[in-house]
Length: 280
Image 1 (cartoon, one colour):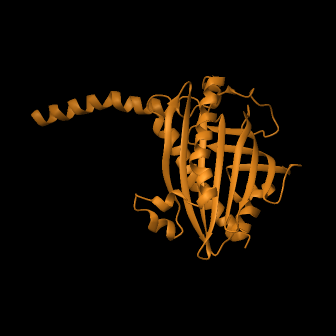
Image 2 (image 1 turned 90 degrees about the vertical axis):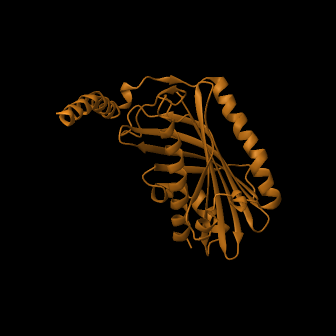
């Protein structure tokens, strides 16, 4: 009798928990239109810009001077994975700021037998991005700017980005300003900063209307990407630093924002390696 009573008590206690899970599952399948809009404040954008500026001083400038990558000081025991050609990704910053959230991950991967010319061709072939980075990029174009030089190739590009999860589909019209700089004979960098990100009102209509910039659902307000390439021992060492700015992460869902950025960096490393190998 005592055992039956215990089982009944456990079953009754599980009902509210199960109801909560079912409610959550039903809630996360809602379309974006059911999620409140958010506003990107100038103070929030300034904090993001200050963060990226400090990164450039702390990482970009030392790489230009000495060619050092973060994997060179690896203390996580993942150097073996890197040397074997596997992507290695580490968190750098994941925190809420004033009315927003910053997510920053670093990733490295080695591409045996490749060189700077291959990664340069991949990065500047914007029309091929839907092939290289599918399904995340569905359309791409880029224009070489008049101030470009052989050592500092300056592009402005337009990419249509898509994001699909178990609970929502979102698409963006994103514009970037990119500089590709050759540093000596064995080093090269790519700096792509956001000019604008506009969320499409209908993720399935790329040529449809967009929300006003900064007045949307706030899933992605800015996304800056920095690549560092180094030729070494007959191969190419790559490092990617990706930083995103979004609305403040709801309580209990911080893990999702972190995972989202980490997975994106991991996938971009793998996709880039495959693209480089395809243009040899």
